[in-house]
Image (cartoon, rainbow, N blue to C red; front, side, top):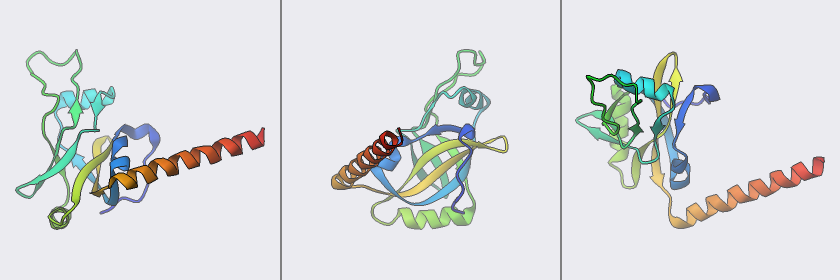
Length: 159
């Protein structure tokens, strides 16, 4: 199911800020993540990077590739952590089938938007997205700068 609610900002682990700049989001989904113990500990410390991550579908399952979780120095001695390990995402089978159909269409891709905590579990918000052309990116920058100027004018006006 597509998520509608915003998460509590304190439950956020990491955001993929480049995603909104590079893609138009069509639909959003919240998926569980299969993680190892050391990865969860690193996430609690905020040692994660999502900007280069993307989602692939293999044999009817979703996987995040390029999501880097850096191990803590105090990680166990008998485990050799791999910071760029491919992580499996958990989603309902009918949602995965729908995503497979959409991704096979030209121009659609799946990207991770953020990682957050929900009821003690790590969730990954993914988006069905379409890439932006260069002129769309310039429009995004122009809109952002326009909003900043309006906020500045409103702030100066209240003083």
